[in-house]
Image (tube, rainbow, N blue to C red; front, side):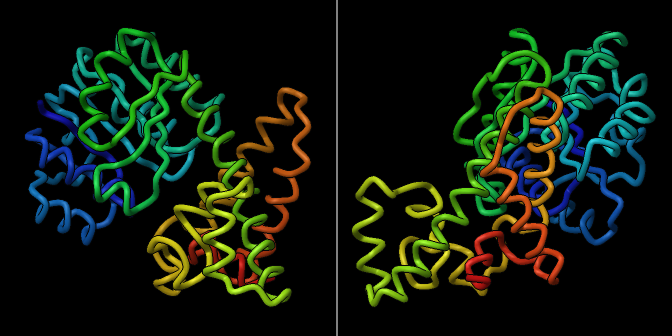
Length: 289
């Protein structure tokens, strides 16, 4: 299949490479010449404009920084320029309203589209083990599933357009809050004189276990390898966690939901990134405790 991939940053680069490995013809676009060069090394054909990249595409996949950019790229350069038969798949994490607005515009122009944000981070993007939360019609999901499966281990239909984004921001609100709680517990355990590996061995098999504990431990040398073992580099940047928490709070405000733990997590990550830590993995917040 001829697939256009727009946005080849930390996540998109690995995702596009996995589409190539799966046998697809990938036409790649990014604003960065360096990023495009890496994509070419991974077997992608590269383009310096979106309109050129989407010409003749059977599917268009995007991984972009925010809703405003998604709306702009699809509105100006994808819708009306890619063949109307092309399936559109936006894997960015954006607000629900923008996802629905772009999907409505695509539908009005004759396109099928899904919002398919991901969970898993850079390692999963490179390894092809992402989880996709997909919003869109049953037909669009059926068409999208084999494409997404080439980049992930789980592809789940969350519901209609925007449902994928809703699932993603709710999931990451849990992640942000549980990571802080996990960091607090390790800091307290250390002050109480517990060996941290022993505490991990206990809590990871007891009622305190969570993904933040068992798969992404914020303490170097404890549990499976994680960004903590690499100076808190790689993984999922704190600035991106803050972005997702802000999206969750905006969504909560829009529907009148009370999210006190999510609110506190957003406050702590806002302070953490304001102190110059936005590029560090989000688990590095343990250093503030």
